[in-house]
Image (cartoon, rainbow, N blue to C red; front, side, top):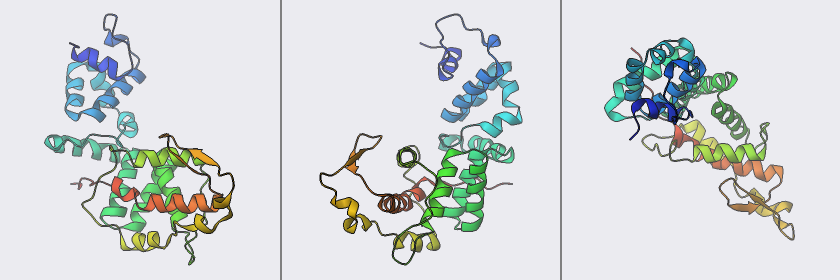
Length: 250
C-alpha cells in the first residue's frame, strides 16, 4: 500500500521506486504535485501542507493560487467551505480559470450576459484555453443573420474545435441542469440553422469525403460555411451545461 508521500509523488508524475526525498524536489515540481492534489481532493491539499513544509511554503505563494487548476476541481459537498475558500483565493489572486468560471456563472446562471462575457474574454486573454474557445464561439454564435447563417469565424482549426467540444461534453464538466439559459442567448441560439448542409454543394460530393473525430467517429466533410454553422449550433446547446455555481463573497 502506498504511503501518503508516495501517493503525492505519483500524482506529480514522479517515480516513487527509490527512497522518497521530498526536500530534493524543486519548487516547480512541488507546485505541480500540490496543484494536482488540490484538484482531486481539497482535504488532501490541506493535509499535504501540514505534513510537509515544502508544500506549505508553495501553498502560501500567490503564484500557486494564480495558476491552480480549477476547471476540473472536485466539488465535494462535505468540503464545501474549504472548496469555497480555495476558489475565492484563486479568484482574488487573478487565476484565469477562476475568472472564467466566475464569468460562466454570471453569464448562464445569473444572466448577467455582458459582465459574464467580459470575464470570459479576460480569462482568455490571460491564457485560459477553455475561455478562449468559449469567447470565440460566443462571437461566432452572436454573428448569426436572419437566414440562420453565422459569419465571424474564429481563428481555430477544425481539430481544435473537435478537441474543445470533446472537453465541454466530458462528464467532468457537463451535466449541470438546474438553471435556465439567458433569454438573449436562447433566442440567438434558436436562430442558428443546423440544416444548412442539406442544400449545400458539400453534401453532394460523390464519392463522399469523411472526417474522423478524436473519439473515433466519422462524419461527412463540410465546407467552411456548413462546418461553422454546425459547430455554433452544437456549442450553443452544450456549453451552458458546463456552468456551475460560484461562491458568494463575504
